[in-house]
Image (cartoon, rainbow, N blue to C red):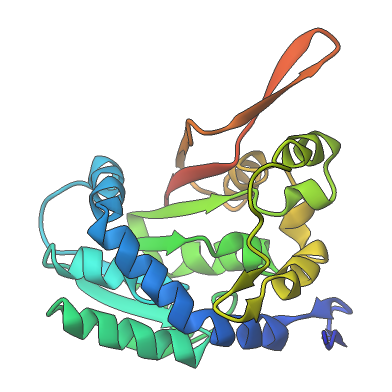
Length: 255
C-alpha cells in the first residue's frame, strides 16, 4: 500500500515507498546486474563513457543510484576513484559485496539523489543508470548533480521512458503491441505492479524524454549536451507520417 505524504512544497512524497520497493528487489536486481556483466554489457557502457569522458588520468567519479554496484565495478576496474550513493541500504550492501567480488574499491554512502551531501565541485564525472525516471524531483536532482560537478566535468546518464505508456497515447499504442510478449509482474516474489503504481504519479512518466532532460539541462546552465538514442526505439504512424519514439537513451552534459 502506498503512503503519499506532503512536503513543504505540497508535493506527493513517495521516497520511502520507492525505497521499500527497491529493498525487496535488491537481491534479484543484483543477480541481473551480474548477468549483464557476464554478457558483456559492461563493455558497452564503458565504450560510451570513454567516448564522452575520455580515457586518461584517474577521475573522481560519483555514481548516483548505484543499485547493486554496476558502475563502481566498471570504473573501479579502470582505476578511477569511485564514490557511490543510493537511498536503499539493501542496494548498498549488494554493491559493496559485488565490488569485493570483483576486487575493486569504492566508497558507498546512503544518500538521496535529490539532496546530495557533498561540497560544490567535488567530482570530475557523474554517472547514473536507470534512476532519473524513478525520482519525484528530477529537476532538483539535475541541479544538485551540476552543483557537485567540477567546471568542464561531465555527467553521463543512461535512462528511458519506462512508464510513459501510462499517460502517452503513442507509447500506449506501442505497449499494446506487446501483448504476445510475457509481462514480468512478479520478479523473485516481488510484485512489480507496486512500482508501476508509484511511477504513475511520478513527473517523468508524463514527459517525453530525452527532450525534457535536454531542455532542463539547458535551463540549468549545461554548456554542452550530447544524446544517443537506443536503436530499439519504436515508431508509430500518425497522419501519414512516422514518429520515432525513444525508449532508452544516453545523455552527456558538460558543465
